[in-house]
Structures are given as C-alpha cells and as structure tokens.
Amino acid sequence: MRPNVLITSAGRRGKLVSLFQQELRKLLPDGKVFATDHRPDLSVACHLADGAFAVARVDDAEYIPQLQDLCESHAVGLIVPTIDPELELLARQRDEFAAAGVQIAISSAEFVGVCRDKRRTPTWFAGRGLTAPRLVNARAVTDFPIFAKPYNGSCGQGVRVVALPSELTPNLLDDPRMMFVEYLSPAEHDEYTVDMYYSHDGELRCLVPRLRIETRAGEVSKSRTARIDAIDMLLDRLGSVDGARGCITLQIFVHRRSDVIYGIEVNPRFGGGYPLSYEAGANFPRWLIEEYLLGKPVEFCDDWESELTMLRYDDHVVVRGTAA
Image 1 (tube, helix red, strand yellow):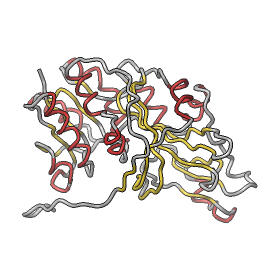
Image 2: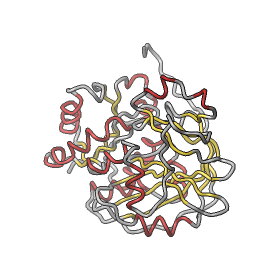
Image 3: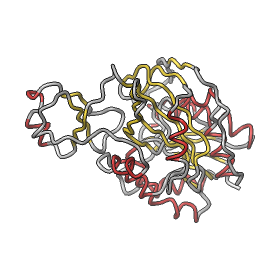
Image 4: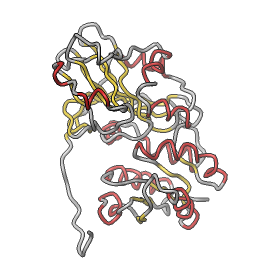
C-alpha cells in the first residue's frame, strides 16, 4: 500500500497541509504528507510538510516525470493539486498515474476545461438550470457599470469593475483574455463560496455555503457558514455531475430580495477559505484519504455547523540560513 499524500504547488497552503496531516495520522499513523513547489525553501506549506521537494514549473516538460518519480520513490498514493494552472495537465494524466498505483484527486479533463474557461461556464450553469451573469458586448454597451475579468484567470487577478465608458480603454478591449459580464451590485446581492465534495463517481456528498464577508487579493479573509435557502436547489441541480471529483468550490451570488441565484465560477480544487468548512464539520481531507487510499465509500453529510465565522490573518514561518 502507498500510504502517503502529496500536495502539489503547495506555496502558502500551510493550513491545508496541516489538515491532511491531522487526518492521515488518525487513519494511517505511519503515513506522511509531502509537498512540492518550484521553490520549497520559500514555501510555508513545504516547511510544514513531512517532506518537501523542488520540482520544475507546471508548464515544464519535466514536471510530470518528476511527480511520477517522487510518487514511486516516496510511496505516494494520493496527489492533491492546489492551483489552477496544473489542473488540466494532471486531469489528462490521471489514468497514467492510476495505472502506477497513484490516485489524483482531480476532476475529468472535460469538466476541468469547462471550469477553467469562464466563457464556457455560463452555458454549463444554464444546462443545470442555474442563472449566470449576462455576457456583455463591451464595444456596444450603454448601461454601466459592467464587470471585466480574464476568462482563464484565478485569485482575482485582472478583474475590475468598469464604471464609465472612458474606462474601456483600447488595451482592455483588445485583450483577448478579457470577457465582460453584467455587474451584480454587492448592495443587492450576497456572495457565497460553496465547498462541495464529490465522490469519485460524481455524486455530491456534502456542500457548505460560506458567506464572503471580506476578501483580500482574490481570497476570502472573513467568512461565515450559512444554511441558506439555495441549498435545496443546489442539491437538486448539482447532486450528480459527470466528471466532478473531490473538492469543488462554487461561487454564487444570491439576490437579497428575490433569492435568484447567479452562478459565477466553478473551481475544481480546494479554495483558500476551505478550512472554515473543515472546522464546521465538512472533513474533505479525511474523505479523500478514505475514498482514494482506503477504498471506503463516502456517505452524504449534512451535519455541519452553521453561523461559524472565520477571520483569517497572516502568520509566519522562520527559517534559519539562506533561503534566497
């Protein structure tokens, strides 16, 4: 048996590493949680892991062979990806790794492709009976503000509210990565991240909405779990999704008066605010270990704590010696 877990592109995800360590030691006391990064000496998560390894960048041809070698030499049975740029690559490699006895907690390449290309996401939402913000022709728009974002962006990079026609600069309009959608005012809508766990056969086993109270650099800094009315609709519309596996984070807006739900984004990975859902009782690390390493089925879980608030803050790891 391969009892170890590898968290890739670990970066600042120290808390996620710690949660996997806690759960792995309960189930497989001899198991270890390893981490990779391009610069593990400058990664908090790598310093907290049981072992850390330097690997090539995700777009380097050596990246996959290096992961394969690490899994073979360190008895890794489960890989947990964490950043958007590696998702499609690892989804395409999932069967090859499985043949070598290594499971990757990753959705199908097709589903990941829909999630990563935000131009395709509105059609996916519509197919599920959910509303998405209306796409806007920025060259013909007369009703401002509108919202602009890269179709393949992440962590809030490049997103902006365009309040005036003068802000639609030639550089913005000619940027092939930008897409434009109707603006949903925070004065009228609440924004939620929904942490969802899907079994390996695409069945929804848990969902926890987290109200996004405050964000910083694209990640939530203050949030609160909430049993909102939208839960029943989400269970009905998203209860079974072909190709969805492991942790999926759904971004939605809910209109305060009409309760209309707008699907914004789907991210097939752990979000930065997931530790709140863990504290509330949604134990995704344990379920991934049970399902992928121990072969145990994951039962539906609705026993999580509502009105639990998380206030994130900066902490640090001190490393003696030269790290740069």
